[in-house]
Length: 304
Image 1 (tube, rainbow, N blue to C red):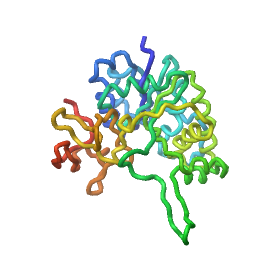
Image 2 (cartoon, helix red, strand yellow):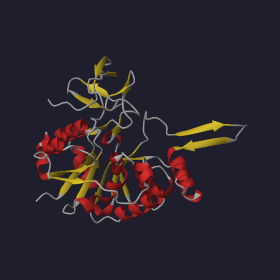
Image 3 (cartoon, helix red, strand yellow):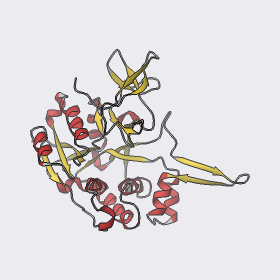
Image 4 (spheres, one colour):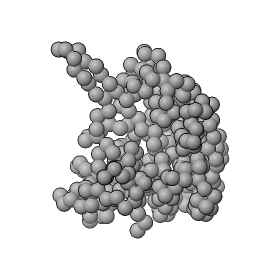
């Protein structure tokens, strides 16, 4: 019996990305001991049948926390903002869960092993969106002399969700955590902490981003024990483009020592001429190689 699982979610529009994620996992022999589970947020019957032999389980995503109907009408994909905080409910027979957004794909299996190791003893395994070369997520508008208005993603979301100011201030300069890839044990207290925070953030804030705010609160306010993993374990391409190692035919970090990208994450999209690479696989962008050349390359997963 498989003890650990990788889980993702998709609707019909993002099915090609989900299929690529699954294929990127299955190409590694080590994946034979890991279950792949899918939350269905609007897949067609044809799409579900197409992946049925590649995965272990598929369940329909639900609104595990009640949200106003007007906020989610015709937006089944938003269930990802709620259901991923309840993975043990959907797939109860596993010991450890590794969530990977469907617009991400696995480039190096070592990071999968370390995600499962990172969540030992109830800890949260996750990455922060801060590091060498990454875009700054906080902004400062200077007024007069030493006076300034400081804006941060965490603080903005917290205030909109009517989180008390004392808690919102704690989040203001905390390095933002991206919830697109994370690991947790089945019996971790992290699930309940996250769910409680999510129930609070959903009451007044936007649906999209609510679960990210809730997990940031769990780490920085509730002090959930966390194992922070390197940036290349959840490489967000919209923050910083990778380089390409032509000798080894793989994507790597753009700065020394050029570690191999573990998980490539196309969060927020890669845009060219008004088109998103997540939607149009034919899109290629200019990136640099380790030798300094500039080449056109897609960042989507391609079968060898």
